[in-house]
Length: 375
Image 1 (spheres, helix red, strand yellow):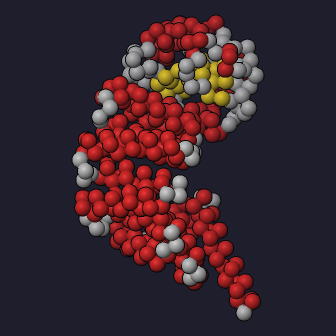
Image 2 (spheres, one colour):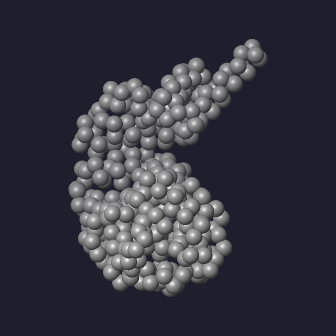
Image 3 (cartoon, helix red, strand yellow):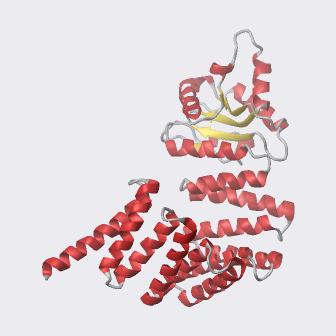
């Protein structure tokens, strides 16, 4: 099947579900996709079979819409035609879409191994539709590993950690089958999945994956590589979250030593490692050391990233937290206010980062007022 796509998605549906499918097609078109929907595309007098066959061959993905009555006979013909012509990269991607009143059990056996889009609760679910658009964008890549990674990255950015993990796992499975265990792509995917498991709170799984990535990075790149430093930082982050502060600090120190050797003492990556170490020092009650580390990180970020960068704002917020806990309210407020100004300028008032710093400002301000009143 040709890889040249005239359409992003072909809509396969039963006539009983025409109205819901038309609404779905309109939503996808409004999201910027090139949609083949027979009501829009078929020309009177044109051979339906030929038009549909051509559209299927030139589509990146096929949405198989399933309503209360299940698949229609035309749908089964369309899907079988796609599956018979699919290459080893499973292009075009076949995506079942469940409408209200349907169930996964209505999917035929040849579709039950596919991830489906669940619109049973709300056919206009913006988040679910966004996932479909993301999946199709990722499917445009001709490399299956890259395809799965891109979908995973987009889903993770959208906050859908569970689905992102499923795509990363598929990418890892393909990468291992293609390249074996010792390959940079395998290491990168192990790092991604490991940090994702950390976000899910599965620290044991995260450590196992990141330790495997660490061994792979050392084997491939040696003991003085940025990739190995990344593995050290990620392992340290998991250990910190588990409360194993001494072990976490050891890994952060090892990462920082590599980074300073490879990148020099003034690099944004160094600032990230200093933030990691400062968090450990803060947890251990070593506030002055944490302040010194964060101050150095801020100096690096101001010089290399400029005065309006989200990384600088994040470090300023971290510094504010340390100063606040240490009782230095005025200094904390100055750091918070600068962080807030940057986030408001770059991300607006409604972004979670902006709101979090705003909460810190209000907290510190309220306590400062309370103390002044008592005096």
